[in-house]
Length: 346
Image 1 (cartoon, one colour):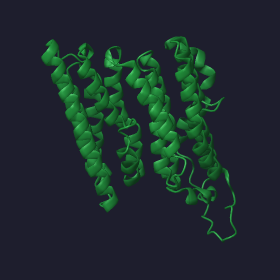
Image 2 (image 1 turned 30 degrees about the vertical axis):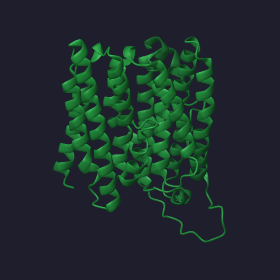
Image 3 (image 1 turned 45 degrees about the horizontal axis):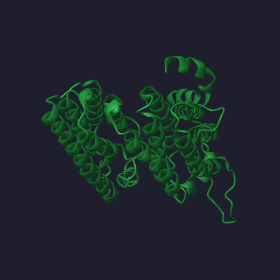
């Protein structure tokens, strides 16, 4: 793909995201979602591999269905209330349809089946966009309609997402699929708190985006897509492997790294809202995803393959670490000490 075409698609993605995030009218929000979908499709299928074409087709069908449901939900609400304003979503059936549509857009359980397959079929840079930027417009819609949404439904979806995301990631060997299930699990944490404290959801999304971007950029630099190749990648750029190890532990939510901050604040807020059982359950379910993060971290830190067959060691490159990766890694592992300042904002 030519640089001009790539830049047009990236600009369209940013435009679509901005339109949806800043719109007040349902039709404008829907237009932004459609621009996003159409702009990402060529980036998914640019390798012309059958798996990439399949991923683009699955993505298109799922997103088209979700966009139709968003339009149907807004029309139903406008029909009963006469309002096209996003914040005036009051019709119960419209709220239910919108929650299902946004869950399908995000990849929340039980609408998660497309996400791991699409991420596996996409190039790693497109996978980064799918896991971060493409999640922002649906989350802004949830943010704007959060007072009207059904707490029981969202809590159920969130706990199921944390459970399925952790459980299905256990047996994977492809790193992109592991990161897809990691994304589903993190979305569960965001969905459970959005009704009670929407700002906390945005904080969680920002920190998740930062950590995931770090992981994807490091994997793109060392050109690793499977656990078996990750085991022998330490000889390429050892400093990047160390960064990857720390960022993965931060994604797992271990203190004293940045990833512990959103989990801590969400559990605290749930307890304040008399939802201690839900907080306990989602905390226990996060142990499932902790297992596969530790598995990835072990494969990153290992310096000898754990079997006797001879492996071709890869040449160490003298290429220095990218300044973007260095800055993202620093923020991904060292933001916990400023949590008092973050709490004053929230």
